[in-house]
Each structure stands twice: as structure tokens, then as C-alpha cells.
Image (cartoon, rainbow, N blue to C red):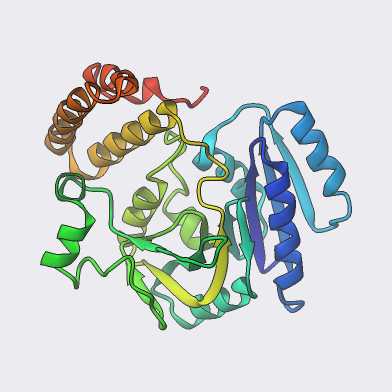
Length: 298
């Protein structure tokens, strides 16, 4: 098996079906592949629609996860049964524009130092979407991306620039990531303690320890219906802060964690006067911003 494509569905079967269709229509016949669809405990009507629509795909495995274990947990379930030499983790709210998999696999086979690769992303209206990004870190949280790109453009290449050749970033978008299975297994895969957000920083930080890097391959292109699979809410904003604090503590230490926790507490205390709904985020932060407040169901 050359390639295992892992997709998570959570109450968005319409997107999952369209994503699978785009994969089947664009992937090269020369690639021996499988699609592993993990349903993260969707509502019964969404799951039934999914089951009905995917019957025609003979290379597809459906795994029914009894709980919603999030991005890392759901993808890990798929990765455990994957048989491909390469693992592609693809958001269900994406559509492939060209044969992304052949392009990405060729790039990785030609460059052993490529640890994870991603195509160039576009919005549904054709507008450019950044694919590379900078690690979640104390400096990024305190000073922002634009400042880091200004003071050290070599270390922090511009996210919003259009590239025509492979471009290394600190990490690539989690909406479409491809790894060698050997590398993915060697670093322990996704951290399943993280429910949502910051998985890219975490896994690419661990790839660096085995001298493997994240690359954008702009020849490969796909559409991302950004945010379609995860609706915005205060709960989701809170989850982002919890994941950020967890990843900073994991990779930068106790003092960095306390600094950013204090920064967030002050920030959301002030913001709550203008947007009262932010008081809920502040209350979680003042309790320490621990993962026991996460949406992840244990």
C-alpha cells in the first residue's frame, strides 16, 4: 500500500462526501491507496447519510468512533489501522484541485529531510490561504506574526507570500498534511491529549528532533472551506487557549507557560468589559487554563 488517506467526519457528512469524491477524481491510477474515514461520534442522521453515500467506494474503510476524540484522537484511530507507506491527514472540508498526492509523494521521495508536506491552500472563492506558519511560542503570542517576520525573515518566512518553489516553514497547515508512516510512528504520532488546535506545532517540533522539516509544495493545490468543520464559539475559543497553553508548557517550559497564562488572563479580563462572553474564557484561565476544562471527552 502506497498511501493511506485519513479523514475525520463530525456532523458534516456533506463535506466528507465531497472531499472523498474530489480525491477519487484527482488521484493518479498509479497510486495504491486506501481512504480511512473516522466518524467522531456524529449524530445518527449524519452518520446514516455518510454510510449511504460511501457504499460505492471500495477502497474506503469507515471507523465509528464511540466518542468525539478530536483531531489528534480521531486521526490516531485512523493511523493505527493504516497500511500505507505514507499517511495523509486531510480535513473533510477540503477539495483537491489537482493530483496533490502524486506531487507530494514525489517531493518527499526526492527529499529525505522533508518530514511533513502540504499543498498550497485556497479559499472557495480562489483567494490565497497561508499554508506555512510559525510555531506557537511565547514570542508569537506576545509580539505577533508580523513582528517576528519583520525582525527575522529568515527564521520566520512570510506566511502570506505566494511561493512558486517548495518553501520550508516551521509548520504547515493541519488541514492537509502528509508524512512518511515511518517518521510519524517514530515520533509517536499526534498528541491525543490535545482536542483541537496547535497539533501542527507539537508534531513539527517533534519532527525537528529527528532532523525532519515542514514544507509547502505549491505545485499541489487544494481548496479549504476554512472553518466549515469547526464552527466558531466561545467554547472553541477557549479550547484554542487551552491547547496553546499546553503546547507552550510542553515545549518551552513552566516559566513560559506562566508568562503566557498571565498575559491571557489580563487580556481577557480587559476584553470581557467590551465583550461579556469573554468572561467565560477568563474564568477558565484564572483557574489555571488546564486541559481538564477541554471539550475532550475522556
